[in-house]
Structure formats: C-alpha cells, structure tokens
Image (tube, rainbow, N blue to C red; front, side, top):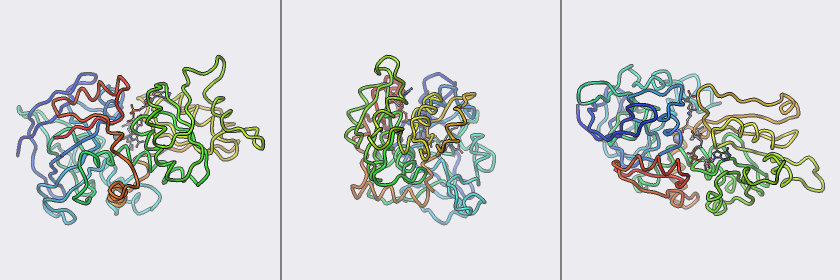
Length: 379
Ligand code: NAD
Ligand code: AHE
Ligand code: ZN
C-alpha cells in the first residue's frame, strides 16, 4: 500500500477535491503506473456533471494519460518497470470473442468490472485515508499521480515522446483521427462536415486532411473555434446561431455542397463531436442521399435518444458510431505516437493550457467557458 495525490470526484456537479489517497499495489496481471500527464476530455466533465448513467462517486476520473511503469504484478510479461505507457480505456486482450472477431476494437475481457469502477477481480485499489473505497474510472483514473491498471489496458510506447503531448493520444487524437480512418473510411476527394470543433472535432479535421478530403465544413456555436480549425484543414465554417432567418444548419451545409451536376447536395461524411442528439440528427440529415455516412462520436446524457425519419436511411444514408476511433489500443496507439514524433500529425497547438494537479478545476472552467481545446495536467 502506498499514498498518492489525486483529484477526487466526491459528488456529481461539485469541483474535484485534491487529496492524498491510498493505493494498493498491483495484483496478478496488473501494473502500477506513475502518471506523468493527463488531458481533460469532455467525457470527464460529462461524468462529473452526473449525466453519465455509469457515473460513480467517489471516484478518480481521467482517462487521457501517459506515464511510466513502476511495478508489475505476478504474471505480467509484456511490461517492465521503466516502460513508457498510455492507459487504454478500451483495452486489447487479443483473446476475447470481440478481439478475435477482427471486427471491432471493443474488447470485452474486463468491460463488466470496468463499468462498475472496479479492477477485474471486483475490488478497487484506491481508498480514502479513512479506508472508504474510491471507484476507478474507465479503467484508467489518470487524475491520480499513480494508478493501477490491467496489463491488457496499457499500450507500451517509445520512451523519447513527451508525456505532456502524447497523453492526448490516450483519447482525443486517436478518437478523432480514428473516426475518419477506421470508422468512416474516408476517401481522397471526399466532402465532410464536422459538428463541434473542440478537442475531438479538431482531430477529426486533422484526420480528414490526412485522408485527402477536399471540402471540410466545420460547425460550431463558438466562432472562436474556427481559427484553429482552419489551421487544421477546415475549408468552410458554419455557426448555426448566425444563419439567415429560416435557414437550418442542414440546409446551409447542403447549399455549400450543391454543384451544377449535383442538385441534391450533402456531404459524403459527417461527424458529431458535440454529444447533442439534435446535432446528431442534423449531422445525419446533411449527409448525401444514396451514400452519406454519419458517425456519432459525442456522448449523450442518460435518457437522451436519437431520432430521424426512417426515410433518411431508406434513401441510403448510414448512421454509425465509434468508440476510441475504432482503434485497437495496444496495436495502434504506439503507431499514433510514432506519427506524432515523425511530424505526420500535430498535437502541440491543440494543447492550449497546462495546469498543475492543484489547478485541475480550472481546466473544467476553461472547457465550460469555451476557452480551451485541451488543458493538460502535468504531475
Ligand atoms: P469540447 O468541449 O472540447 O468540444 C465540444 C465542441 O462542441 C465545443 O467547441 C462546443 O462549442 C461545440 N458545441 C456544443 N454544442 C454545439 C452545438 N449544438 N452545435 C455546434 N457545436 C456545438 O469536447 P470534446 O472533448 O471535443 O468532446 C466532444 C464529444 O465527444 C463529447 O461528447 C465527448 O464526451 C465525446 N467523446 C467521445 C469519444 C468516443 O470514443 N466516442 C471520445 C472522446 C470524446
Ligand atoms: N458510460 C456512458 C458512455 C460513455 C461512452 O460512450 N464512452 C466512450 C468513450 S468516451 C471517451 O472520451 C466509449 O468508449 N464507450 C464504449 C464503452 O464500452 O464504454 C453511458 O452512456 O453509459
Ligand atoms: Zn475522452
């Protein structure tokens, strides 16, 4: 048993509390990791707000981290102390029915206990100093300076990559780029609309440029998000709150894509990176009749449901969703780190704020105020 510092979510809707907590060492198949840096993703905010049906309190949130292995439990063979790792909320056991199917990245080996805030043996490694158990979060809990993770939920990465940048590959970068490459399968010359130009949407735009998309329409209610999006490849911007009276966002996007030969208009691919179910509908309905593919990335609150006229699908549009950009963590994450180190993808400009653990609540404030893309906490 050791002590570490963590930002603890004691109650829904309340700021995190920074405190010392107990952390039990790794059991069989587990690894003790010193977290060096963690991003704050909108999903952490979503769970802290109380909107997540799987949200548990008290818990240690955070799922976008990078760190170093300090100790390995019995039977761990693929990692050793000193290895640099990125925690995976989507593990890759390479043995379960889902992994073996080759059809999905949604490994099912430990999903049951992970959703209950517990390690695979059904217990928590974290507790308050008075012994009260604290739940794990998404199997990661990167808002703690040290965490314990299953071996199958850690991607080993090269040791010359900066933690304060590659932590973002633990969620936002991989989710956005993966949604384009793995889930949508965007081809050269495509047109696309991206709803929500935050930490995920910008990476969708980055992925679209890598895939060779021609027209990349960004949609956001916050005009200040457009500048960075343009740098990453956005060609057109739509603010749904500033459209001419009577014009819907779908109509605006369809107008932007109509040509002499194509009077229907609509984008080949669309992506929701807001978590708003009306936006998800708009994203589907602005995609092209006959072949448009719309990918849901955003996470919607408990009880929210999507709807559209079935005619939208009858006429050839396809509605899809993606978790962690369809990426297989242990296989793909080290490649994303190489792409970053080789200059093939950009991360640095999207990390708009660096904070200490004591300042973590400021990261949530900046997100609420629409002032940050990614705030990264460095330990
Ligand atoms: P963010 O807060 O950085 O960005 C959200 C953006 O959406 C903001 O720029 C905001 O202004 C914009 N927005 C909000 N409402 C809008 C509306 N009605 N129309 C247009 N724009 C609107 O958040 P993020 O970290 O980029 O996360 C985005 C979403 O993706 C969240 O729902 C998050 O939970 C989800 N997410 C999903 C996955 C996954 O694996 N599926 C992974 C990471 C994040
Ligand atoms: N717990 C929520 C759903 C949350 C959710 O969809 N999480 C995404 C990752 S978001 C990362 O920022 C995910 O990977 N989902 C797949 C999974 O197995 O959780 C709810 O609605 O219950
Ligand atoms: Zn995330």
